[in-house]
Length: 137
Image (cartoon, rainbow, N blue to C red):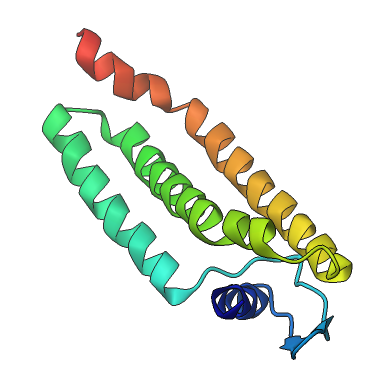
């Protein structure tokens, strides 16, 4: 239960909600913010990954026009996917069913995360052929 409580608190901070946990109750005091704000560590990780990807693309001789978007979107997808797999989904699996309101809010947050991943993947699609083209020529 302790690790679940920590996960709930981390999730509630990320979604700008306040969840109060005691022996048998879990109370959501504020609803999740529909606009997700990345943490400083997530932003730093994206920037670092972008720099590494840009260096790699340069090594591969990929045109500069496509590389900025490729690096930005691939880094974003990597960080979002990791956060979803390491935080959001385990919390969903561990949250007790009697906490229906918190589960409802978490499911809404999951939908927003998946929408953000979908958008990042769609934004990547137009420039991705430049990456495969680097190996064909």
